[in-house]
Amino acid sequence: MPTTSRPASIALIIGLVASAVATIAPLLDLAATGAIEAHVRDTYPGWDLSVVTTEAQLIAGWLAITQAVGIFGWLLVLARYHRSAGGRVAGTVLFTLGAVTAVLNLTLTFGDYDRIVPTSLGALTLLPVLVGAVALMLQRLHRQADRDAAVAPR
View 1 (cartoon, rainbow, N blue to C red):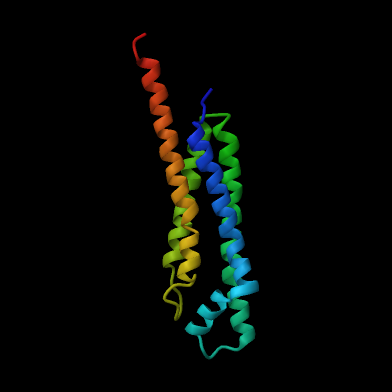
View 2 (cartoon, rainbow, N blue to C red):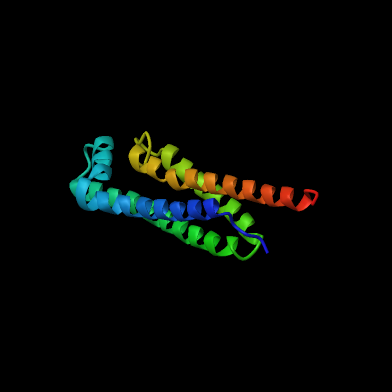
C-alpha cells in the first residue's frame, strides 16, 4: 500500500490552506478593500457604478469558485494519497488544472483589460500551485527512497 511521506502530507495541508486563503481573499476584497472594483474602474472609467460593481463581483466570483474547486481537489488528493496509487495520478492532473487556471488568472485579457484579474489576486491563485509542486516533488522523492530501500542489499 503506497504511503505518503510526512513532509508531503504537510505540504498537501499547506496547499489546502493556501487555496482556502485564495478563496476568501476576493470575497474580502469586495467587502473591504475594493481592489477589484478599482481595477475595473481604472479600466473602464466611463462605466456606471452599478456596472463596475457587477463586473467586480463576477471577477471575485470566478476567483472564489475556481479556488473552491481547488479546495475540493486538495481534499480529494489528501484522501487518495493515503489509500491508493491513483492519488498520484489525481494529484498530477489536479496540479496541472490548477496551474493552467492560475496562469489564466495572471494573463487572460479581454476588451480594454491588460489582465482581467488584478495582478495581486492572480498571483495569490499561484500560491497553491507552488505548494502543489513542492508536494509532488516531496512525494516523488519519498517514492524513490522507498524504491532504493527495497532494492538495497540486506
